Image 1 (cartoon, rainbow, N blue to C red):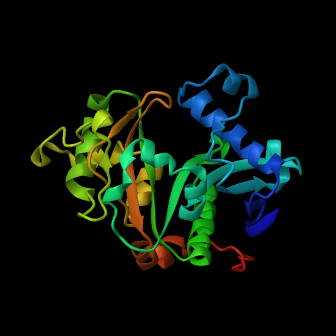
Image 2 (image 1 turned 90 degrees about the vertical axis):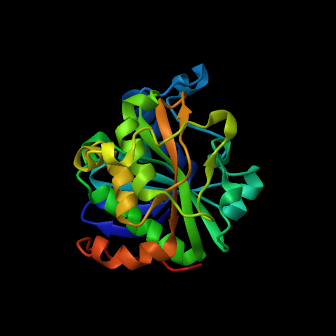
Length: 266
């Protein structure tokens, strides 16, 4: 176990044991399959764990509720998967590359893929997510990351049902050339499903999932087009977030979080 921060009964860690990683995978299963309607293999449902080949190469950020006891299976209440570029090379590529062409990203420096973020339904008041983002910010500094990216999801498989938030993202948060991954040709779904003047901005923002709104507040942008992920019952956009944009917003976004960081750069 590597403890990063602590806030009352909540402890932020980088998972270092198989049991902690398995607990994060079990939480992912409960959220993605139990709540969001993801489809999976018989093996996935029997194991009640969301597992893929990237897990073995990634770092896993977890939040543990110490009041739930020492057993990771019952105490992990939030998680994020962090896949650095060097680890992705060993894994044969990034997870996001199955949906988006990442070759359009020309920003030099080290890249980090964010993924598999989820929080137990009883802990969605904001504190757990703030702890996770506090850990990510420290992780960026530790590994000198230049750019974060990953798939960000809207619920359901029907792009017309989420036309309003998709169009809002396209017209208001499209990444510039050089930072604009494009959905793969055989999976490309247009995001500009409404003209800019047709968008009700307040309704569009209300329709965005909280995690995606959080990325935008930190300076996140999206790539060109969307992808239907039938297995996870989502419509995905590619989120890109240069770390210099995060740093400009970091202090005021996390000023209310009072934690004692014990992270030391390796």
